[in-house]
Image (cartoon, rainbow, N blue to C red; front, side, top):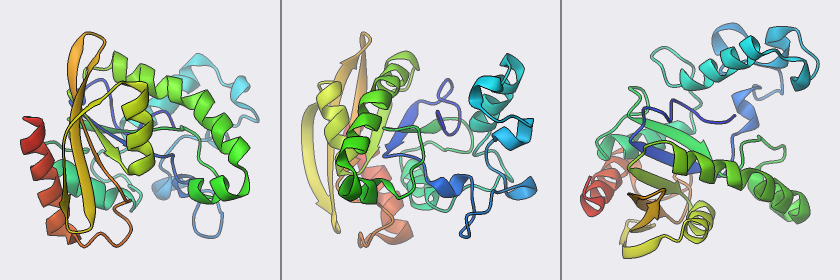
Length: 221
């Protein structure tokens, strides 16, 4: 999954660790189909390998990614808290003013954190393979702010893009930070926080929007 939404129109990009395998399967491991399907799959095209796909099929698969947040689409529940933060930032995942990216574009089973405990070598290999693509996206697309959803994402992007931290603070159990970097000759605001919003943060829905409004004020957007 290269992106969620359209980074070409987004002025804000949120960044997570990696996609969930439940973007493609249900809780029983069955492939999502028809109205529940979120992305094009090899089965959609009657293909066995990615290398079998033609240019038209690849374009169609990318269009699924661009339209992920379109009204009526079955957006994965993980995005709920993040959408509320983005709302507070004055943007929206559903109208194209925000998009979502990941450090690693491949879904993993087990989850990313469990993979780190089981096979740190594989986790490092995936990061080495995929981080350059994320950096290319941030340098190429005209977003004005990048929001790092968690400690690991924050650490990697601060390091790779030489982000200068301007301010830190707390909101409930969240420790947030804001900063900026020069990216492809333009100033880009960066912000993030320490723990996944799906954990106990003490925020609730109203607090997630408040976090977004706080970061918007600090970023000057």
